[in-house]
Structure formats: structure tokens, C-alpha cells
Length: 312
Image (cartoon, rainbow, N blue to C red):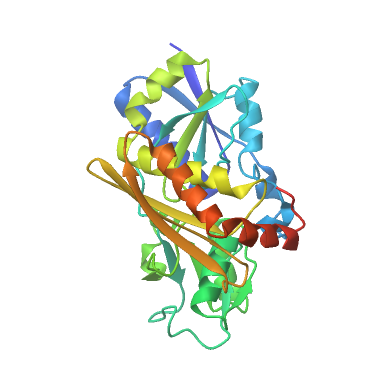
């Protein structure tokens, strides 16, 4: 019987996600043999620089993709929000797994929320998307670059001059830290990253055995929502990190989707929503992106890219 090697980053959260995929596959195919292969990515090695300043969209995926293409591994497990919209030739998404709540959360001393944090509070995050939306909500916030795995970030909250962290609910929940959450941040304040909350499995396009194996792992509603979000991101982003948030939700035969682009200080922000059908999720993402571009998104994003010396 063939053994399957699953490639994953080595962080505790990434390993949790890879183990979760392995367990689901064992349930779907009893007796299957699976090995986990830990791989360190560029994003795991460079921890003293903000993500946007590195200017590389494959920060957490490229080494896994190289291992896939060289057949050292058979599947690569990613957080969907880390996976670039353009995959290398020869690779495809074999499954988009059921989405956890995609919201961001506030980790702070008990009883705190975004509204009652101290004036000029230091907020830890490395995400341009979070920075822009939180500065829109409260322009007095000081945004502090905090990188590293979840345990490292939580430790920095205690050891450094940081009043609060902004993190994804999914990661906090998966590692058992839900009791640290002070507030689930409303989508009206902070739209999530594209794909946030879902795990994706990347495979070789010609590995039909693995593709067949993954069919039972793909979650139709989550997949359609995230495909719409990724189409929007692909149409807007160019080639670098930019403040874009989006959330698509499936209800019956419809997908409702809201997206935002923003200047870095949050003072120039565009939020637009649209409804489409579930048959062509990518069409909805492209239509919404085109509407945003007509309403001024291109100028907003151009200024952000100039700020980070990124030409897309």
C-alpha cells in the first residue's frame, strides 16, 4: 500500500492542522499510511521584519511547494490565508476544508475590548489588513509589529510593552486558547483575510490517486465562499502584501460577499458588497473586484505599494 507524506510548517498550529487532515484521511480511508514531514519556510526564518516589507507572497508556502514538485511529499497542508492566489505550474488545490469562524479576536487583559483599551494603546499585529481597519476604528492606536508563532506572540504580550494582540479566532481555538479571547471583533470593524479560518491541501495536478483521496475532505460551502474571495484577491492585489479584507458567505444558492481595501492609516477605505450565485464563485469575486477598482481601489492600492516600494 502506498504511503503518503504530508508536508507542513513546523509550528504548533501548522502541525495541528496537518494532524487534523491526516486524521480525516484515516477516517475516510481506514488503514491508510500517512507520515508528517516538517518543513521550515522563509516566513518562519525571518521574524524580525514586518511581512509587507519582505515583499514576498510565498513566504509560508514556497518550500512546501518545492517539496511537492520534487515528490518529497505528496500533499502540502496550508492555512488558506497564507496560500498565494497563483499556484506554481503543476500544482492544484486538492481540498478546501470546512471553515472555522473566520473572525479576528482581541487578546488583552480581562474585561478589555477595542472600545475601552487605553488611549494610545500598543496593539500587536504584523497584518496590514488589521492595521488599516483598526486605525480606521481608533486612530490613536499604536501598531506594533509582532511576528512568530502563537505561543511566541502570547509570550510577547506578557513580556513586552503591548496592551493587546489581534489574532485569528481559528488558530486560538485550535490550540485551546479560547479562554484568552476578550472580544470577537465584529466584521463591521474588521473584515478577515481571504481564506481565513480554512485549511487547504495542495497537491500535484497529475497525482490522481491523491486527488481522489481528498474528494471527501473538500467542504463545498467553504470552498465556494473561499474561491470567490480568492478571485477577488487575485484581481486586486498585484504582487505584494496589501490591506485587503473579504468575507463571502453561502446561503442556499447565493453567495453574499463584502470586501474592503484601505490606505495604511485607515482614513481612505472602500467597503463594497455584492451577491452572486454559488455556481460560479469566481465570477462573483471578479465582479466585486471590478466594481471596487471603478470606485477607486486602484488608487488606494497604488499608494500602499509605493509606500512599501512594491510594484506588484
